[in-house]
Image (cartoon, rainbow, N blue to C red):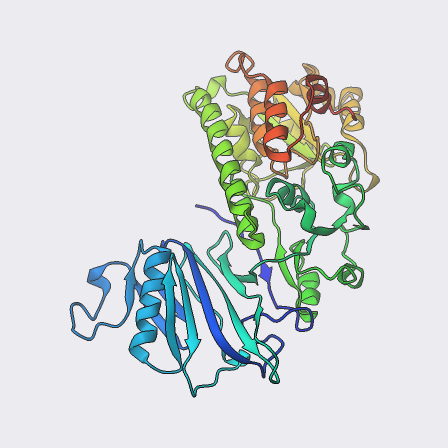
Length: 479
């Protein structure tokens, strides 16, 4: 499976909070109680490491070199549950019989206390490592300078789309939605009330977003983020977690300020759309995972419905489709998921062999050579550029473009947007339905896009659209 790296830079604020893992503030505070909670299932072989303990996770019994030896250390196999991990972690601690003792093991959570006469400081608490498929979070109680014991928030380890380990705050309270699609994602995950600052790309050209999202219209807004983010201004809002663009210089600046950031990216396969939302959900916690799983089920159900109707189409029955954004000669190559979307919808993506990602420039001769049957236009109006309506008018009014089949037959369509661009955000599943319905009206006669938009907005944004409002979204009209 082709996956695109979602870069994550995570260093925890040394002044704002007392986090569990080394490199944080409060290094001289003595720890009295430590708790680790496992979640998920070990999908691959690897290692669980915490404090001074290491537990091997083997692929199977054959790969366990110790075999049935009597002194077999604590270990697990692929498929082990969170409960298994907690029990084996407890066994490792009990066998070691130094520094820590087990207080309780319950439902994937292990609680330890420092043995009498022993001393553990915050700086001695090491980062947790777990195999792919599992997550782990921890917290501890500490005392400082003879003060009363208090609980400090911990960190948790999650995985990005490439299986890379990512460390984020266990329960981030202040979220910065800087990356364009991140605001919509946080709304779907039920976290809008935690957003403390957004960006201009989420407000410009999206009056439906200001109407439907409850906080967007009142939140402070970072300007010109498509070009660069003013990190100093961003920091005035004291975010715990920043959903940022994948720009190395900005990620480095955030890291230098000890701020955790999750860098977004465009998806390269349709499968990655719900996967990226699930990654965000694990990052924010607070019940978001259930929301992400609900979206994944919806996404897969709709995609299966479309695919079932188009999978057996002959090549001759698949019209050629060109998808563009920003202007008529900017398209989406094979490193984006738009070619796959067109294929699933029952078309042939003329730009599918182009070795490029989103918003890739071509020339008119290339478009004329492709000569698509259908053209879909998205992303108009960025940085004061031409609107999609102006781009379509340009195509219909230009003698050169009139030679292209889609233009000659007036099969140039403006992609709906609603709260955000359909080619970038979570409405992409609606885009799949829209394209399929447009290029194969006979196959999808029963597919009512007005109803589909209403259902989606109710289920994932909590907003009841009237039929008239849903129709306006489909026709790119303002509220």
